[in-house]
Image 1 (cartoon, rainbow, N blue to C red):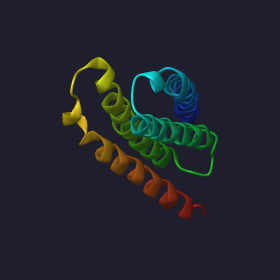
Image 2: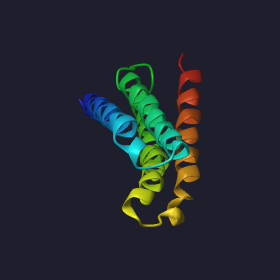
Image 3: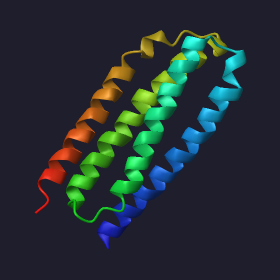
Length: 132
């Protein structure tokens, strides 16, 4: 039962993150282009892409029965820490031009989020290697 609950949480979170990535991608393609430069649009697209990649991985992870519950949780938590720090900080750094507020002090969050995503992938690989 507990396994079903975490799987459901991972699946719903993955679907919500994917929906948000589509919405943000549309905003980046159609709303932001008039407000920021090309380099900022490219950065925004990077945030959207990484969010979508990890949303899809959550949908896969939530359907996997060959990885232990503890490993799933660990991977999921690293991704849930990494996505908002990596992608979220990119979104904020891009729209700070639009808001007229300097958010450059948040730039350290992007590599920190990337590090959490990397750890999530490392634990995912280790979990796959442990499959008997």
